[in-house]
Amino acid sequence: MSAVEFHEIAGETHEDPRGFIFFPWQQGVQEPQEALRTLHLISIAPGQTRGNHLHPGHREFLYAFHGAGVLLWEEPPGQVQERLLTGRRTLVRIPPGIAHALRNPGPGVLYLLAWRERVAGSPAAPESVSRTLTA
Image 1 (cartoon, rainbow, N blue to C red):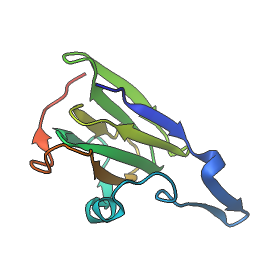
Image 2: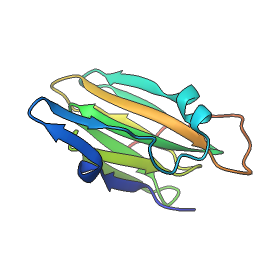
Image 3: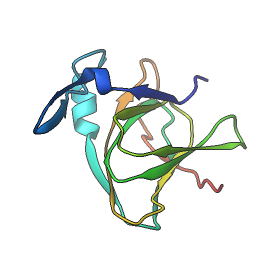
């Protein structure tokens, strides 16, 4: 099983005085239609947690673009890891089978983009399986 990866994407953004632009699918997407089908925008209110699941046959990508949150993931099994995501242009790649959740410690709303990509040769369903993490 491969590890959760954190990719700094500052070098992949286009910036000017108005802000920045990031095109997440310009490189390496195996099944573009699958990524587009699973693309979703998530908001997490202060004090709340979303996720608490794993994807048996899909890798998931998370991009927190506003606010801050604590990513929780179980790796190795039985051991919960944590990392603060602050919207500092970090793309998270979560391999299949790794349980994960995102907690918003507040005070503002956390917004992120997420999408999944099926791993070749893996089952398409179920896409998600519930798995509660506590840390």
